[in-house]
Amino acid sequence: MAGVPIDDTGGGARCTQIALELLRQNYWVVYVYRFPKWEKGPSVIQIAHPNLYDYMLSEFSWEKFTKQFATVLHQHEAWALIDFPAPEFLPFARIYMNMAYISCTI
Image 1 (cartoon, rainbow, N blue to C red):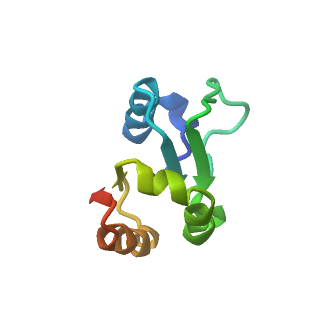
Image 2 (cartoon, one colour):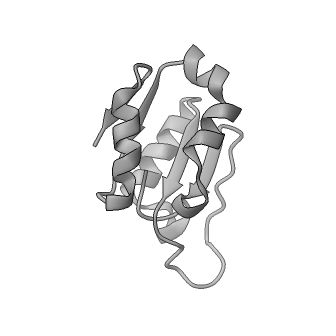
Image 3 (spheres, one colour):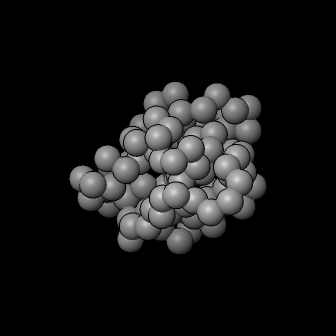
């Protein structure tokens, strides 16, 4: 969970760099960001990967996501990294901390 979209700030944000490294290592990455893109104009980078699921927080539904990916969530170890201290992320942090199959780092 991040403040900015994965392709904002030229891909240089810490949360983007962590996500890109996890993708390079063939992990699945669910990248949820709080704020819309800050940069105006077309992005200088294009990030596309079959293991990347990218959502703006206002469009993300935990219930829909867990229904769609229930099998994957239970078959693989999962963890959550909350990189940006937005109050809107707290409900998700509580959910993650109460789920036995997800470790949460804030």
